[in-house]
Length: 475
Ligand code: ATP
Ligand code: MG
Image 1 (cartoon, rainbow, N blue to C red):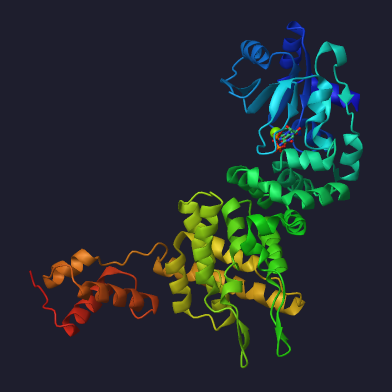
Image 2 (cartoon, protein in one colour):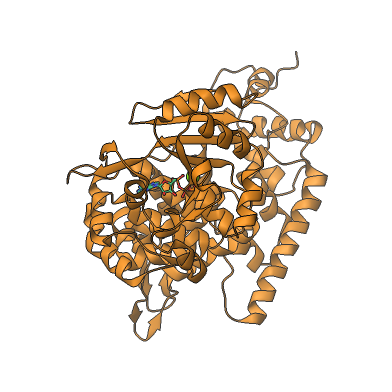
């Protein structure tokens, strides 16, 4: 092991960092996620955490001189932290510290500390490992909490008392669950019990930090691991009650409906196999969120969720707003996918008509591919025959879309005739007739009654105007 570690430390930027700390005669360590992921044989990380028993400022300044081509240096207001960019590495340098907490804040009181103090204040044993980079203990792994063992056994455990660890900084509860999801690790049971006890401490964590962890869970390979832990701990109910409300099956007159919580997690896992896009994954998470509010029982048809897509798309806005997620085009994208999330399914179940496909292309525009991908991820039936059939139907939908698009040039549809031209043609100002004509032209194109091109649209416009009593302007 030591030989492999030394091999890494002989490479840049570690080589220069080591030389610099020796020149300054300070004791220094490679710590944090880089060490963890390196020991897990993951792809090399580009963010490097360096801890120094001494001044982080001084080390950062000298390192900037020694590391040729380093881009910029940034000093943080908070105690002894500096950041330096070199090539595509981000090097964070911190002074070893000892931390203590007040009950009403997750921002610690910080004092200069020893290596041991600094390892004690870290969140998990797997994040407390330190590798010596100065002469004194070059290449040595310092692992006071047996983090190596936890890495081997895939366990998340706090170095000190979990109750104190989570209560001091409740963000660590989300970090524990995030790491469980990213690494596919179990949270040690004592730790998990402690999270359950401390969930109300989430009050002192900012929305931005929670969302930061939530997004990392959503971006992990199998996000359901994280969401199941969020649910089991009680945190889900506090931060995303809308998803928590999807749990359960109701029965009435002997009839039940689909369990929507586990279904949603399956859809999220499915989409994560085919897309790395955070917002498409959010859409998968939220695609059925309107179901509890739209649920009705009808003796003839059983359980229905009519309009859940519309309700759901309204909820997307509320959720984004509450969590301080961006209320920009990302939110609109998720909203639109939720709103349209059943449309391709309806098409695929029916005889697939050209006009239904045209309408879908027209309504979804640039989102069409993502929408179909979402619908395919939505197939969670355990019946293998149905599973195969549904997927085949979507293949037909995809082929049909391609054929119609090639023929009709419909994506991001702009009618071949504008409102202005209608006004000119009939010599009228803005009026409701223009809206009526435009809508009818669009419908005629979608229904395949006319081609999506100028001549035939113009002809129909003329006819429509005349039936509305408008006078054709010969010019
Ligand atoms: P990643 O970069 O993949 O998110 P990481 O472990 O490097 O993982 P960072 O947030 O970059 O996580 O933090 C670096 C290190 O700082 C962690 O490994 C951990 O030792 C420590 N740390 C970060 N946040 C906390 C916290 N809230 N409480 C205690 N220690 C923390
Ligand atoms: Mg990191």
